[in-house]
Image (cartoon, rainbow, N blue to C red; front, top):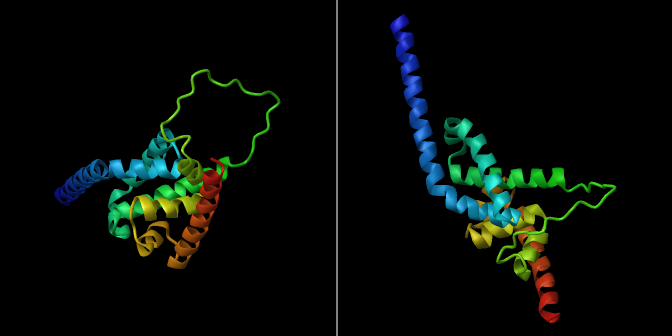
Length: 179
């Protein structure tokens, strides 16, 4: 009986090691795309790295379950990133009033695309609309793939994309006329 338990434990440990190797391989191959996707969602590379790291920590801790249930781990990861971003946005969107104006740092880092009208317009979109636009036009996913990734219907993807594109056209059109 004791030998059977020892063998079962050894097989479980070996299976866990193989799962972690699979997860490490997934992370190394998917990381560049996930960081780009995160940057497009959040608007800056630092928040993107935090978003990707947080989501991968959660997924890595239950990797074998994700593989069994999700089918496509990359789509599952993207959906998790979009959901985490929307959740964070909901938590932090409330205004915090303070009695004194905080000091501003003297040397703020500026990014090359920060002042580009397209990036400003994209950043101003609601989180779900931004996620749909990024997945469609940046990642090149179909409406069905976006719906699966975000866990919504194809009709929701179409309506969110339509609203986002109308907003972008309006904002970018006003920018072009103002030149």
